[in-house]
Every structure is written in C-alpha cells, then in structure tokens.
Amino acid sequence: MAAILLVTGLSGQHSATNLDLLGFACPRLAGRAWSGEHDTSSVWFSDDGGGSWREAPVPASTGRVHMNIVPRPDGSLTAYFRSRWADHVYRSTSPDGITWEPPRPTSLPNNNSSIQAVALPGGLTAVAFNDSSRRDAVARRVSLYDEIDGQGIVADAVPQVRSAGDGDDDRTAFWGAPRAPLALAVSADDGSTWPRRRLLADGDGYALSNNSRDGINRELSYPSLLVDGAGDLHVAFTHHRRAIRYLRAPAQLVGSDA
Image (cartoon, rainbow, N blue to C red; front, side):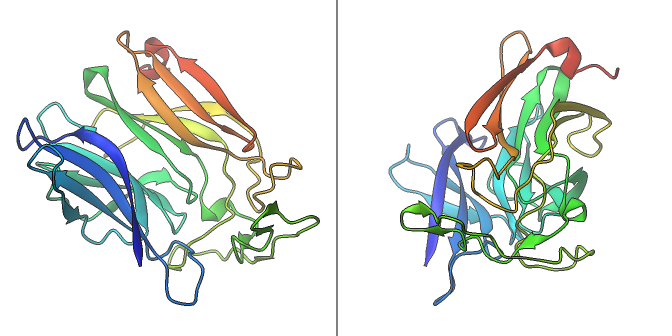
C-alpha cells in the first residue's frame, strides 16, 4: 500500500480555477517496516475546484521527497527536494506545475532531513537546510524502530548503528547524519548556484537517536520559512525535538553578499 500525504500547495499556473496539492508516496513492502528508500514525489491537480484530483508523478523521483515548489517571475516553477540518500538537495523545473523534469542534485548538501524553499523579492530564492550530509556522519542507524514501542521511547533502549560508509552510490535510506548546523542559502539564478549562505543555528545535531525526552537527540531541523511584506524572512524550526525556535532575518541581511 502507498500512503499519500497531501499538503496544500500553490494555485496552479494552468488556469485560474485549478488547484495543486503536493504529495509523496511512502510505500511499505510486505512484511517490512517503512524505511523510506522507495518514496516518490508527485503533484495532484484539480480542474474542478477540488471536486476530483489527478496525479502527475515527478519522473525519476525515488528518494527525492518533501517537494517544495517556488513560483518564478516568468510563471514557471522550480521545486526542491530532500534526499533519502542524504547526499544533496535536489532540484526540478516545470513550465506549468504538472510536467516536471527529473530532479537533479544541487551543490547544497542534504542529510535526509527536511528543507524549505521560498521566493524572495528581487527574483531571489532562499532555502533553509542542514549544512551536512552522509559524508559528515560518524555512523548510520540500522533501524528507526529499535528504541520505540507502542507507548513511546523504551526505557534504556540503545539504537543500533553501523558504519556510515564513504560513498554516495548506496541507494538505501540513510538515517543518522547530523541534523545541524541549520543554514540559509540564497540564489540569484533560480537555484543553479548558491553563493550566499548564512548560519542560522549551530550545534552537533546528534541524530543517531530520536530520544528527545532524555536530551539525547540534539537536532536543529524541519525549518519553515515565511517572507513578510517588508522582505524580512521569518524562520521556525525544531530545537532538539523539544521546542520550536523562531528567528527573524532582516531583508538587508538575507539579500546581502557580505
């Protein structure tokens, strides 16, 4: 079975009455717990105001998930993806929100943790992300389920880990890469290059355990971005899975080369 998670997206470019939803499929193989390496991305669109929906899969998107769509000034769209392989942030483009190019890696690293992209004034694009990848990991998790049961964290549970490896060719979901530092990158060429980077929050980002109750998990992750009318950028993210932190980045700092 494939569970489709739908998140409200942006109004479609193909007609004024169309609606688009973003989704990703999380297949679970028979007899096995979900692990993520078979996940794919798609756009669901409606031509009748939400009465019915059709799926437009993003081609070659296995392992490229949490699709973030950014509208461009010319009416085209660019999407950015988290990578289950914990290698790079991926990027795809579309003329209409339905037909997409296969996602390709950008120069931004990704650790198999969520990102968020947003359009800034002046044709800029900002992405909040963890500036780390599998290459920064000291180990990787064997399972996501070895320290939890139906009641939550199992007392004295110790997650199993194994060698992180040193290559990007392994196409199994990589869990346990550090989820820090949290950074902001800005592009002036629709995501082709990212010369402007800012540190938002720092730490060791320990993510080889989900145990936040005892302070073992120390990730700075799952950023959310909002641009206000003045061009200031508002950032919210999880702090050690115990609280939500908020930052405000003034417009002149976000768009500066300094």
